Length: 194
Image 1: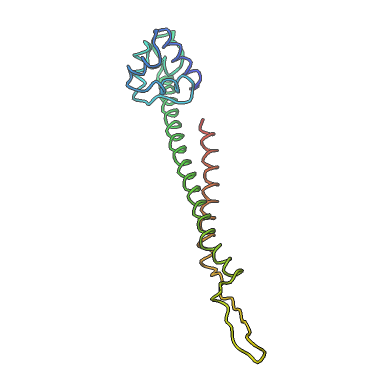
Image 2 (image 1 turned 90 degrees about the vertical axis):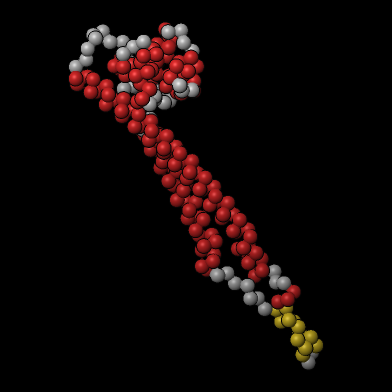
């Protein structure tokens, strides 16, 4: 079944009936945006709505599914099976796209949170440890007396723990990369289902 032909057929029938998208939507208990999506081939009605939609538009269910008026009143079993199979396939693709879009948004949010985690960790703990190693606090300097006078001994004790660094930077960075790669793959799969 061709989505564009289906949508154009719905629009044509709706206009022949003298209905607006909102009036048709009210008859089917859906939003006018849903009707608009059907007519622009961006969506497909739920299987439960196909029969009420056909009745509201004054055509048979078979005519609605084929996207054209039927000359003969009957269909062969094979033609009817093909129409039903196409409708079910279209509904499954539409549902899969909806769930994939939701999953992509989840991945995008998770990636944003891991990016936030990465920046806050870097700028709070790791950056502070690096600064301690470069700029020593006055408490780290010790003054002792010698024959020549006081001598300052400066010791640096700030070191980075490799495991802390890995968990502070490696884990959110890895999570960010995984989310980005999966979001791209999910987007490509969404496009394939259109």
